[in-house]
Length: 111
Length: 115
Image (cartoon, rainbow over all chains, first blue to last red; front, side):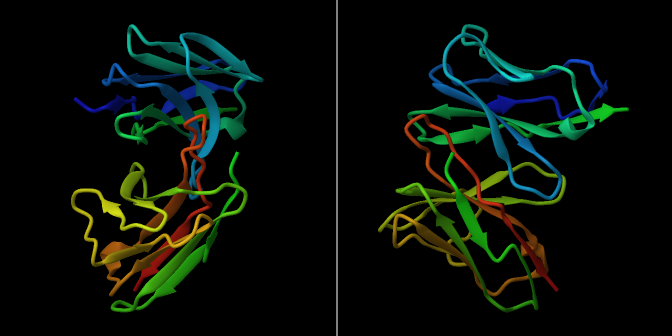
């Protein structure tokens, strides 16, 4: 079982719709959870951090964490073509002292 | 977040030459530096972790004698690809941290092409 799992996609949503990206992780003692956005040919950019159960909103982005289910998600409201990118889920576990990344979900926002 | 620079952004070299990539953490004291590699349309892969003033720890399958990492200060780490070959062509990205929130920020990356 992979430590951090994401559906590779592509996930295609029309402009203006809500994009829902999901991630599961295997290590129950994971402490911190992150979403990165990576445009083609560029390095990852941190867009959301979440540390406790529930929702965290930042503009059009909402991160959701459910530690009991070992599940973290990212919702993008009012999706724009500029949101088209690969979204990486990352999990930090203190014992490893490093981030573990999922393989990423490619999002395509269509006009 | 942390501001990170990498130099060069792009390099093309002949097979057999060595290439040095510099990573600078401009506003964050990077006790730890992570080096990643990413092949086209593939996921990010951790190559090695270095701590300032000590030897790097390499991930399984990464040759430590081929990918030399120096982390002599809290603001500078270098990755040298020795005797580069076409299969080393990739996107190399450094990342200092994590910070007190466990966040990691990435450098802009260096695209290496070996002919």
